[in-house]
Length: 338
Image 1 (cartoon, one colour):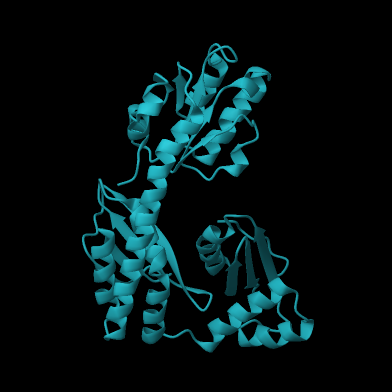
Image 2: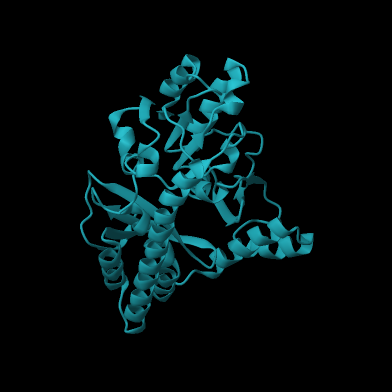
């Protein structure tokens, strides 16, 4: 089970701080806590990944203008942290009302720690448990991957592989093609209640399917994600056996890689026609450089499929590249944006 905010607040080291929820709905107490972090740095938001319980003594906040305090709250809310816990005392006698108002608007849970506690002890107590849980999830995810590999080696199909995954992850599993067709399924697939974790399944760099893991209420979505990510290679092998990618798709992937690496023009001229792009045709290129670029690939592919006669995309680390062919004679027409 994941640690939620209410459970974190029940630990003795945090209970000693006499915490009081100043903003946030009762549902906020059920938010998962991924990590407990302590910082007095006002520009900490870009370093956070979401799900953190952030502890602060308020020294830096006490010395800045209300506008900067409000900006601090907005930045933390945008990162999706579990909660901000501010210690009130000599440095920060009370949490400024402007910060609380901004937190209510931005949907950030703010806790007031009314007693001084050693933040190091809080982090040691809670983070040690979170690390142990993460290790346990990784082990169970590896167990799922090994069991699926054994099933595949004995000739198991997609439904059999997904049945193994559903059992190990305690979640319903469904594999869906990029066009939305169900390729295989196992376990309960609830239409409402619970949550759905989605993992992309590429084959040789091409998005071949998406894995949906339907986690019931009270289930461990963290385990489902780890098990799903560990199963990607096995599912990719099964998909290759069932429907290997064509030469045109492979050429499209190589074309994107060539564009990304800055290859010579003659290489692009060779790969373009093989990937379905006319040498003398009009084209448009899209490049996205961001830490979350890979997550945008599905939406970009869907948009290009609607707007262009042919397209190809490739995601590598923090870069997403796509090329789309424009219709002949239509270079001057305005393009719509979906």
